[in-house]
Image (cartoon, rainbow, N blue to C red; front, side, top):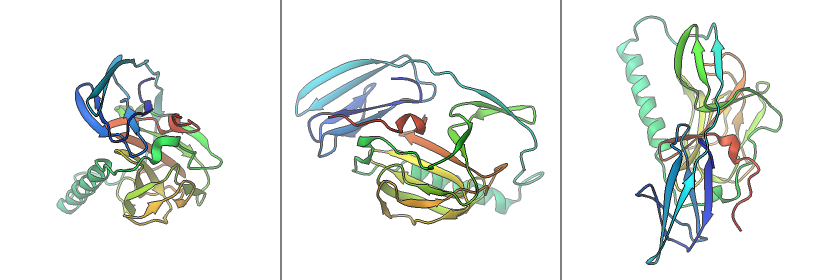
Length: 246
């Protein structure tokens, strides 16, 4: 296990799952549960399973991850100077909607068999977790992975889930889709040229959700792919091709 990584486990159905003393999930009807580790997670995590009164506790070692430093010049500004009250209100409202989507916790376990890549062919132009220096100014870490592909390239759901946000015209993200794969495992797809799903829609793995674009705050056509679990920022690419527990 590592920073920005995860663990998928299986135990007694509906067992209570605790991480570092906090209850974070109930195992699904199949007994599956998910644990995510933040980009800057500490070296250890304590997991406790309460399975109908039979407790199991394990100490997990979390390995450090190395992150890139990327320098960008000429990023298009969304607005110049001081924002108008209307623009400030739009930014605040969109932030609220994104936060609510990332806080979604559905009683599903579509995460249990890992992810497929959302694009068939792509080039990684920015890895997860890197520090960006934009026009000479340090920015917060990049909490996504950027996958470059031509505008219009189909984007597909990496696993089943519930669409918790779908909007073609966000200020910063442009076209965006967010999917809850169960127990708060929420993935996001940014800068889409088209959004082909609607909020509340249930998806299957491989179903088209949109197309690559450069909408919002972007320098060229690419998919920014993000993943969060209960406030923790994780690398979605680490989920690709991972088999679930027996």
